[in-house]
Length: 104
Image (tube, rainbow, N blue to C red; front, side):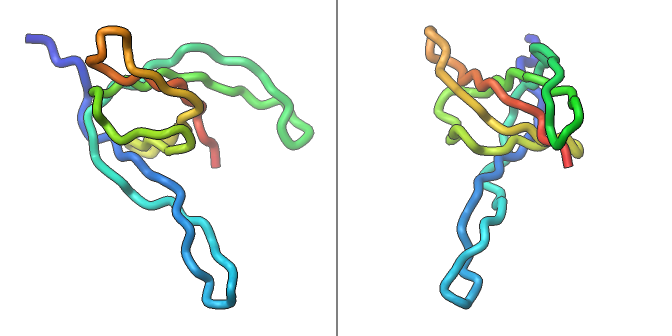
């Protein structure tokens, strides 16, 4: 039997934390560790901070029923991608998310 997914992906979600002065800060908190597959879709150049930067679009696939939302980050082995859009496959067995790589 062929393995569909790699293991060791982590889902992070932005959460608000009180700063103790009536405001808040936003921090990325881990939500779950899941199996999935990350594949490159395309690359384009886009202006950012007065420079052209490569923007990599990726497809992340995981099991249906996974609590994955638009805006979440998926991380593995030092690589971070942001979920821009997601949908369940027509057969309903998987979630497919379109992501963009996050660079520091």
